[in-house]
Length: 251
Image 1 (tube, rainbow, N blue to C red):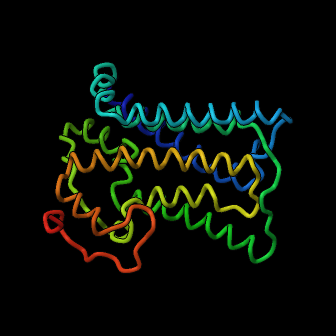
Image 2 (cartoon, rainbow, N blue to C red; image 1 turned 180 degrees about the vertical axis):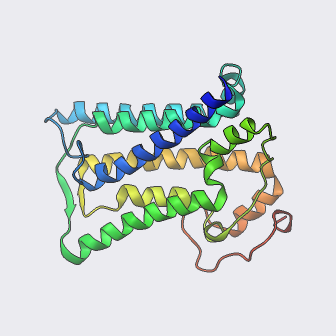
């Protein structure tokens, strides 16, 4: 893959994922998009549940598989190392889009709020979106989506080694991005069985993914990260943040 091709590839991955994420907002909130979580033909409940579970399993399986270090070592024999993250981003967008496209509705309502309660639930959803977006920029937005890796390769610069840091939100909660995603899943004034199934399965995947991520972070940063784990909760924010500090001051 030539360097201009890499730049186009990375930009395409970035756009695809962000379009899929933005579409998910409309999908979950039943905004005027081509298909929402409660749209679609009637399907037998058992069939609908089986299809929906399979869709989330596909998303979670490939999302987890491609995040494993062993797979990355094998995969980068096929694709350039600098394109590995962008490929990961593309598959995430593809399988998320597939899940939304083929999702089978289970439209029985669990709750349906109006007025102030509805706006409060919209507020929860918006808070989740803000947490996700802000969290990406607090760490490294462009590295997270693979753009930094491709840009550095194009400039023939070495990719910086990972450095532990805990900026702003990360001083209150270890995984503000995943917390935001969970709020996005559940923040809706109209919760149906199908929506609850989507939110529940995706949250289960988030928790499984965090288990693996925490283990990887401990391997990478050792006692520094263990000290961080002891001071900052994983998903339920603490009211008083830890003080700003360098990575070595946590150990």
